[in-house]
Length: 230
Image (cartoon, rainbow, N blue to C red; front, side, top):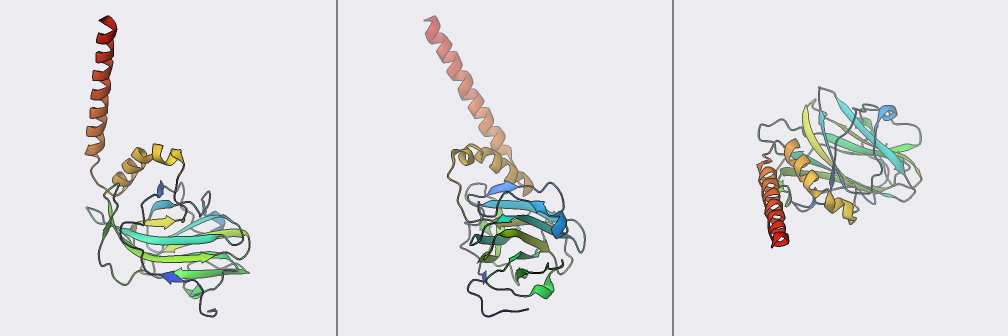
C-alpha cells in the first residue's frame, strides 16, 4: 500500500566523495536471502560500508539489527567502479515496524511480515559522475538514499536485490554517526587495505609505506645503539 506523502523519503545522492568517508568496511559472513536468515549487524547507526555481491540471477541479500523507537535509519547504495567491471546496480529497501510511510511494497523480493512497513529505492536510472574517496582513492557512483526513522522498537531489515537479475559487487553505506573513537583511526590502514583490495586496485603503496617505516625504525635503532656505545 502507498500511504500519505512521506515526511522523509528517497533522497538524491549526497555530494560526491562523502558516502564512504568515515565508514568502516564490513564483509558479510553469510548470504542471508530471507528475513529469517538475515546477516546480523551490530547496529544501523554507526557508519559502515557493506561490501557484498549478488552471485546469481534472482539473488537477494538481507541485513538486520535491533532498532530503538525513533532511531534514524539512513542507507545509501553506491555502485563501485571496478578495473575489470563486474559491478551490480541493484535496488534496496528498508523494512521496519511502523515506518512513517510505506512505498512500493509490491516490489519487494521477500514477504513483508504483518505490522511491518517498507520503503523501496529502485536502481538509479543513470550513473553520471563517479566520486572518489579522498582516503582510499576508490571510485564509485553515488546512488539513492533512504533516510527515515522507526516509530517503535523492533527488528529492522535492509534488503538488496536486482530487478533485472544482475550479478556483481555493490557497496551499501549504512549509518549516520561518524566514528570519533581512537580505535577507528587505529584501524585506518586496515580499512585502506580492505577497500583497495575489494575494489581491485593496487596496494603497492602499502608495501612501500611499510618498507619505509621498517627502514626508519631500523635506522633509529642503529642510531640509538651508537649513542649508547659512545
